[in-house]
Image (cartoon, rainbow, N blue to C red; front, side, top):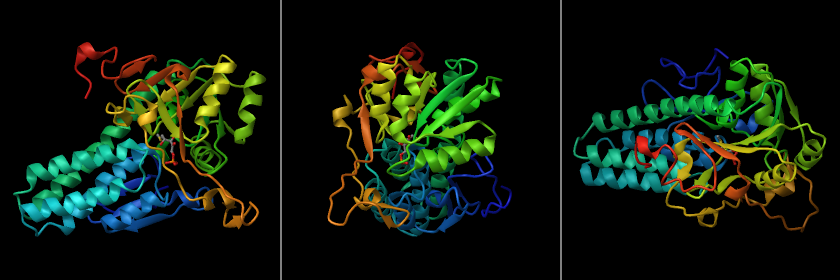
Length: 366
Ligand code: MRU
């Protein structure tokens, strides 16, 4: 799509669309409203950190790395609004903005990670009154964005090496360009395999509660000309039992240091089915999704979202009035069900301690 609404700066996503971009003046965020896909490609223009936080909470933008980048850009808007303040007041405003952003989606650790990076920078530059602090935050946001796209490409190369030619990959939810700075993690693996000349097909699920596979993964892959078939969540076991799945590749919202992985609700069930059928189950994620402070999956907070997202579909009630609904947005797949984790730094095979990854001789994990 060439009619992107931001002017004066190239999209950093590297695709014809972007989950989020900062305009050249560092004044506005443009977010592709993912709730409207596949029907409509519409960008929202956001001018304040509160608007950015609301957009993250309300799923305009989603996917752990994309949320992290959006938060870093949100901090740019906070720095702009605080540009006239003295050092103390500036830091106070930046910390408050960080809190607002952090509270929006608790499981995706990239959000807290990006806010932390912004606050470290804010502390370093607090005494420099005026435009400089705002500019520094914008540079950081763009750097995190570029680094995420580069990480996705590296993850893709590493993961693609594990996919045989002719593979059908089952993926759950959307871990594509829409969920990252661009290119995608799980879909990055698929893209890299296709770019390497392998024939690859995708079975996309997560048809409920949010239809991220049906709406978003299918939309992205169709644009790329990669063969994609949507299956509803209850069909994964059947497809595996019929020999239709060579590998499962999913993204992650947070990976504990033992390799336990939180991802979109339903991932755990897919992992159990993959183990039962002897199918490799791969997690693809940037290092910013690793939480070294979480010893195991039990330490990962699970976001609970509104029951209405379960009881209603497209604004229509589908559950009888008065019946309760439970909506955990994520589940945790134990490391023992994970065949390998692909990160931009390399591949890890659980059981593991991510504080000491196999490539640690090249430098300590941070
Ligand atoms: O609720 P969502 O849509 O933000 O959940 C997204 C996922 O679970 C993704 O698989 C995960 O964030 C990885 S995105 C590269």
